[in-house]
Length: 145
Image: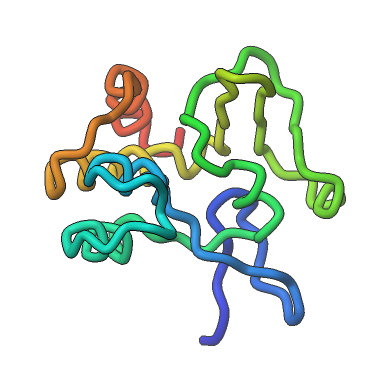
């Protein structure tokens, strides 16, 4: 069967829609771990291996992937979806705060998958979980419920 569904909104891949590869453990975080100024200027061989690790890569609609950027995952009180204008008609459970400490809250059904991707990156490459460990343990235990 061709196609699939994206991480954040669970929508089928649509012909012509900008689909990107989401690094659940942000590529800039990986570059920083290996002492590089950013993901575009990181020749470190271990960065290349971690950045391309399929356990960390998920398909995502481009506008939502860009909206997330390298923001931490978090839990946002209430339920107010905050989709980029270009995909506002998707009506999916994606929330994001703004400001210097902005966080992204993905839909419940994928929180456990996200947690396990982050745990894997933490163990495999000794990457810091950036204070998210207690929340990620809850997300893993809930398994999308």
